[in-house]
Structure formats: structure tokens, C-alpha cells
Image 1 (cartoon, rainbow, N blue to C red):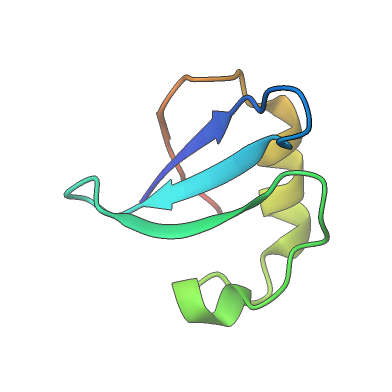
Image 2 (image 1 turned 135 degrees about the vertical axis):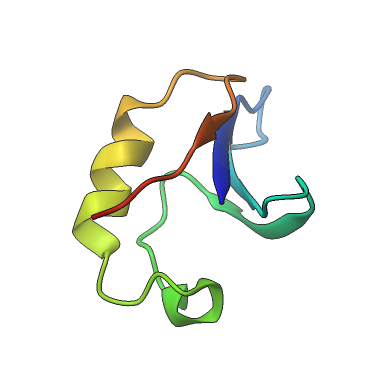
Length: 68
């Protein structure tokens, strides 16, 4: 799975995209909202780790999501 942080403009907020191994979009959510419904993406119980990854992301840089 891959993750990318997308910079919003004006009134459009910043977003996070989760993409699968074929780079197909599987999730799209606001960066400033609490993480919920992560069970849909196989990330249940990894909210804290994912939040720390999101905080450290650079805008527009795709990176492999590796949570322990």
C-alpha cells in the first residue's frame, strides 16, 4: 500500500490518499480529520502509527506505507 499527502488550495483542505500496489486509489480522506473506518482498508488498530506517518509526510511525495 502507498500513501501520499495532497496539498489543498484556498478553502479545499489537505487530503491523504491510500493506493494499492497497482497505484489504484482505495481511500481518500482529509488530513485534519480523526482517522475512522480504517477496518475497510485493513488498517484496524493502527490509528496511532498511521497518524504519525501522516504528520511526517511531505506534500506530493508518494511513499510506501509500512506499519508495524
